[in-house]
Length: 455
Image (cartoon, rainbow, N blue to C red; front, side, top):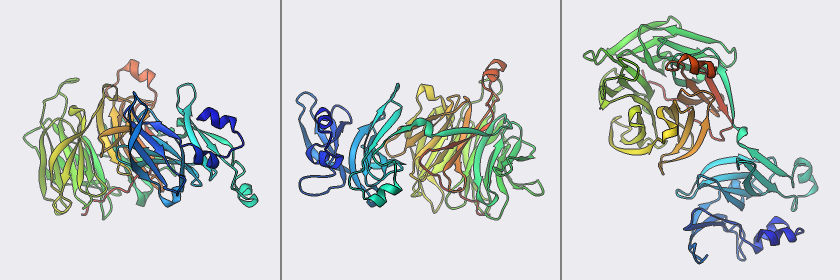
């Protein structure tokens, strides 16, 4: 079909699509096709068919995605190595990435012209996307506004930009939180026993030293912070640097300390504990727990017998709680009661692959997808909670990636913390960015504001 179209060079993309239907195979059993223009009407959908590899026959047609109004008409399509579909939106000025299993849009990449017609992957390692466009159907005024119409565009993975923004190195940078009221990134350096705040305006880092290893920090509704340090919950007043203890826990476990924490949709602070190493790579197993600190300062234990209670977040509909116990090398999902704050019914969501190493901190984006920092894996990975599959990997320039959050004016920037503790001198010499904080832009997705502790 493509050869025939090339020979008919005078036929526009819209005319061509009335004759042929661009299509792609998701696997050897299913065929996906867009049927944007039929002989009868516009269906504005991507369809899937059962496909018989031996005979080449298709059947059992069903719609897997209906385009939204602003996406306009679906046109050409291609598939990536993760089995996701990329659809060019004619008159929509974009390509969209779809998950054939859930029928949901995962990503949108906007182009500088409206009439995007088709797309394919190419280049040495097929990491570049090429997008064709058209001029037919545009009047002179329209063309004057879009002088690039009819051109072919190359979209590169390098459109994702990674830069080191906090050069002050952290022994164990963790728990980044974007604070809108200060226009700043708040985070902890666990092993340096510091709570830190970085301003992107002045590029200055301020810090408050505390008397124990501080695993997590969260924003308070009334100003200041709630922190989990040592084995106690406390408030931190930034101006006076005063730390006021709320409650001490696990006094029978002197080798334990708090680790990651985050505030739930109702203003309760969830934070978990872990056993410290007694020697490199040696720690008592299943000594940790997950606690919830309520606004009235009462506490309940949600989980016990954990190894390293770590990344946590909640689904956008507030019905699911996500949690990482690092030594399980997995992300688990729990049912969550937003009224009581209680969790139940754990199930495995995603088990990390060997090269991804160990899961650490985690956050959620505005599309409900999870981003997991992989310590010693040098990357953050994006996971679809509905399918339990990884849908994106972003590699960072240092191995000990510890946590991530979205921030910036519109939450379109991702901030990623890292560590240098645990690296020997030879490795440190090869990893000059270890312990720095990175900003990732161009992900094509935004985050959501952090919840505030309601006391």
